[in-house]
Image (tube, rainbow, N blue to C red; front, side, top):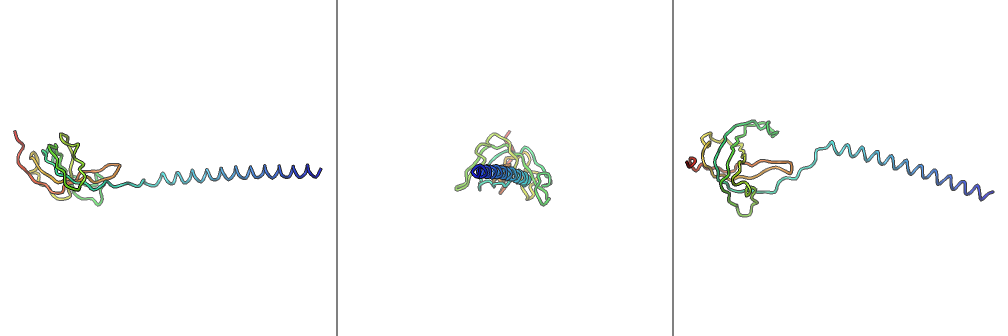
Length: 152
């Protein structure tokens, strides 16, 4: 009879331990779920684009001034935007070139510095770089030179 009580006690202990372990797993799953929700609320970290720069030649098809707040850039300031039909690109030694696949395409380039409206319709040569991350970015003007009016 004593052996029977001993086995009953061991069986009871194993059942209780099993229930406790299941409870801990459920609690852990709830905590993970909470942590997952908290992680989703935090904005994802972004990875900035690698340093790059190139020289493009192209035709200015559009000229505009806009508020940086439209592009969610802070602090608010005036930005100058040119839409360029890219004709050629040049590599800059030691720099990545993000304009290689832009020949024949329209790109937007931006500047914080004032640009003359007289650039509209002209052929320009500009040093540009792409700034952003894996979610997007923009081309920015470094130096710009008007080469003349569009050839007819």
